[in-house]
Image (cartoon, rainbow, N blue to C red; front, side):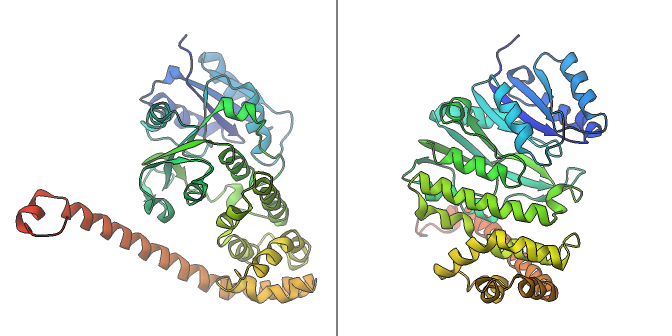
Length: 373
């Protein structure tokens, strides 16, 4: 059997019916299905998912099935189990809800090998369950051209593309050498791993091409967040602060905080799964970030956080929770305004690209012979 080049790690939970489509996208990879080691790690599914991945492993020599004895609640534990079992020189991560464009593995593998890089990155598209593209590219990525970064000197450029731990190819040797892992039992574990990895990289390449299709799923845990989710996420971000401090990169940490506090406060305020009482119990997990942003003078662009901060500063958690609950109409208006701004930003970027393509065309050169190059 051909030696695999990429270990594709896929945590699973209650997704037996999605496995055939997932397998089809892996079989379609132009790199070659046989060059992939596929590790399914089931997080204690109570349905038939464990049996389904066992059946796939029995049928295909390059598929391995790992089953955790009980559900951990988040992706860290199953991904760690698969990390320990992986044998290929490169690692890629895929969620069972999502898909890979057919050339994704080949593009990342070839770019990684060509540049002798530690990390190769493309970008995610947001797609509907039927495969229709909702958003081709996130604005943060659209503004960044293809490039190679020498790290840590050019770490700030890589942190511009901080919104996805997916759409990347990692070097397994680097993960093993530094004992990198996913925190278990907490959300944010994927971004924690990404930052841990970036802080140990020497060279990273960016392709400026789509290599991952994120399927919008309203039933996923990220769309149904409860108080436990937000409390642990606040704690996870605080641990990320420690990562940057330990690497001597504290000055870069604020780059990953842009709008984080405001975004999650709005989510907590809007959630029907969080009562006012549990909200008051959850907010202390974010106190450190309130104080950090206030001390750095970064609360002004975060209107909700700025309003709540005086109560947080004085430890008035019940009143802070009440204010957040009363702010729901404001949150809805702010979210709508931000969505509209992002939409127009996308239109502006598309127009800019169209103009650049037009100016590079032969017709433009013929009709504008004296235009500046």
